[in-house]
Amino acid sequence: MKNPEKMKVLQIVGAMNRAGTETMLMNLYRNIDSEKIQFDFISYNQEEAHYDQEIRELGGRIIRLKKTNSVLELYHVIKKFGPYDAVHAHTLFHCGLSMIAARLAGIKVRISHAHTTLDDSEGLLRKLYLKSMRFFIVQYSTDLLACSEAAGKYLFGEKRSAASKYTYFPNAIDYYPYLNRSEEKVNGFLNQQSLEKSIIIGHIGRFIEAKNHTFLVEVMKKIIQRDKQIKLLFVGEGDLRGEIEAIVSAEGLKENIQFTGVREDIPTILHSMDVFVFPSIYEGLGLVLLEAQASGVPCIVSEAIQPEADLHVGLFTRLSLSDHPSVWADKIIEKAGQKEQDLSKIKKGFEYNGYSVKQAVKKLNKIYQSNEGDEHGKYIDSFL
Image (tube, rainbow, N blue to C red; front, side):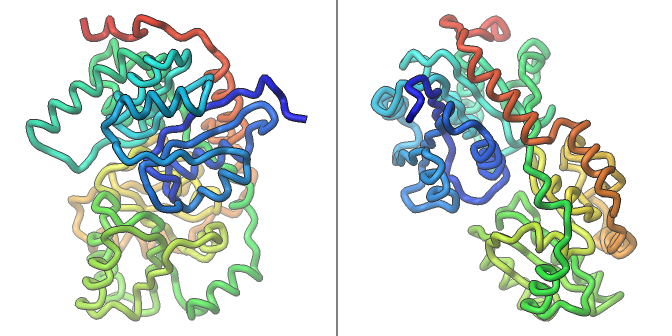
């Protein structure tokens, strides 16, 4: 028998493909009480996304929209598919439009969630857009959440009066599947990829400029000068995959760099790696870094990675992107294979830093159920 008082929350995303924010949302959705809370998702992608079917199986709906800049369309969707107890937006500065629509629709709990520290757009019109959207976000949101301090300041503003009002919300994961290594599965993957005798460097991420795949290719050129048995795995898809593959081919690195595409067996792949490398140009946090540390894999990251991603279990090394690729190569070779075997240490790292999915679900439930709202815009004083 269905609970007539089930809470309904509308999650606003770009598309529920496999990426950091989307994976975090699915971690939460799998662990909430489905008898009490339902998630629906607005998607601006007309094609079936990676998590769409699982969302339906969990009782949620996918609502597809075409006009990303239409407050009116968002308003009508909220009224048509509601009533919603909360609207939770994850679409960077577009959150401003979502908050206007939610406020007009009478939603009491309106959440803007910061997940990154930069975007790729420039120009005067873009700056005006960002300034106006930040104003609407801070004015019409009842709750501001951020995965890191830098992400919060970027989306909500540098002003102390605005930035101090957001709540730190860790990108929690269900870390248990990553703790225990299955030798059978790892050996099966290594055999499949013909990597049985190789030292494996790994990277998991979308092929976009921010992930800096080209820099990692340059690093790999230095690495194989030292040891030709070292291999690099690129896991993921994205618009720039073809371009990176062409660079790898032109540099004669096809024997040492493999592309796996999107994979479902991420715990197995992480356990197959000797070191994980994440040279992002900018990053809100880097959810996959939590997965890598849960797997006990040493991580080499750029200075753009937020300090909140470090579980402080001895697996985190930060380098500068201004360092020569040979510096990165030396550090990667040094750290390769220095895995953390003490599972209790890793568990304590997750619990102490608040990255447990159970902790996150409890915190989110409290936010969704606050139900106070503020009809006048809780944070407008920050801009007056």
